[in-house]
Every structure is written in structure tokens, then in C-alpha cells.
Amino acid sequence: MSPTIPSKLRVCAVSFLNTSPLVWGMLHGAQRGMFELDFRIPAECADQVAAGASDIGIIPSFELTRQDLEIIPGTGIACHGAVRSILLVSSRPAAEIRTLAVDSSSRTSVQLARVILERKYGAGYRAVPHAPDLEAMLRIADAALVIGDPALRIDPARLPYYVYDLGAEWVEMTGLPMVFAVWAGRRGAVTPQVGEAFRDSCRYGKAHLEQIVSVESARRDFPPALVREYLTRHIVHELGTREYEGMQLFLTYARSHRAASLI
Image (cartoon, rainbow, N blue to C red; front, side, top):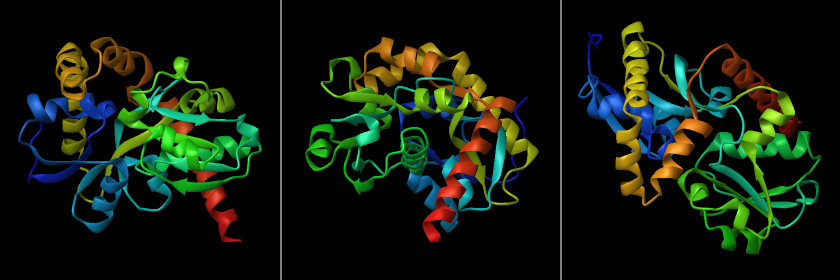
């Protein structure tokens, strides 16, 4: 039986492929009609919740260093290795990067790039915001950060550049999963019933993966095999102790960088 939600909450979801299983139940399952869904890029979802325009959103984990939000436990977006959809493409080795063109639609990805480049490779660089166009980005900077669906359209094996998958880089550096985003909302909005509805929606999506592959591959013009592999081998939607341990380490690094930048 589906949980009872006392009033229809405003939920900001993300338009990228990686969130499809999270909202599939809200779109097609027993959770359909429980929430008012609005689809945006990750950074905009965070801003919607901060402004009070949404009650709950899929929030870039970095945003937890800036907003006092209540997390819906057990579900989100993470990886245990190569994530495939967050690529740092460079004309030179990582340690030599001095300028980085960034697609700033996800604040977590931008901060993850900074953490990895500074802590793992000792690279100090200047970030330049740019639309996700790889060749244009590399004309103005040493390297480019491309995320989400645009990154999935890139075949790293065919590029004449250095390519760093930031999910794989994080796991190699820390030995922990990387959590990119969580469902979170304002205090009072996240009740046990709401949390169960969100987890049920994710379970419904995982149980209907082939439907997602069929629909999303056609809608986004991706090969079905790419969608299936991405959602089953690269993205993790169920979060447990190890995922939250990895998230807390990332937040510690992110807060440390913010504090250092203020000195």
C-alpha cells in the first residue's frame, strides 16, 4: 500500500538520464500524482529549494555545505567507480592544467573536479564557465568538465585527449563511493511517509528498467545498450552506510576548500 502524503509537495527533479529511475514511480507507478514535479538542471533544483519554490529537490551533495536541509535517506545518485557522465577532458596531463572550462549545471561536479585536481594532482587552475561544447571549451582552456547527458554523447576512447572519469578518480583516491546528489528538502517537508514514497518510486524504477531503457533511449537519442549499461553499471541509486561515508568525506573536503578560499 502506498503511503499517504498529507498535502501535495512541490518536488524539483533533474532532467538528466541518471535520475530517471528515481522518479519513474512518480511518473508511472503508485506514486503518480502524489507530488507536483518540476524538471530542471541540478543547480537550479538547489536554488528552487533555497528560494522556497520547491519543498524537496534532487540536491547536488555540495549544496549540503550551503543549505540546512533534511535528507531523504536511502536513495540518491552515486557511483562505485567510473560514472561515465562526469568527464574531465584535457589537452595536457592533469597536473599541468591551469585553466578549466566548466559546465556549471552541477555544483557537485565542479567541486569534485577541484578536489581531485588539487588533492590528487596538485594542480592549481582558474575555472571558466562555458556551455557544454567540448571543442569550444578546449579552445579557451587547457581542459573541459562535461557532465550529464552531454558527457554520455562523448566516446572517451575516440578522443585525442587525456580523459579523466571523475567517479573513477574519486574512488581510486579515497576507496569510497561518490555521492553526487540526494533527495533533500526544507525542515518539516521530509516526513517518514514522504521518504517511503521516494524510496518506493526508486524501487519501481529499478523493477521497470527495460521500460526506462526503451523510453529514454528513444527520447534522448541514445543507443539502448548505452542507457542500460549506464543505469546498471555506472550509476547507483540506493544509498547505504558506505555511500554516506563517502559523501561526508567529500563534504569535508569541500568545506575545507571553502574555508581556505575565504582566508
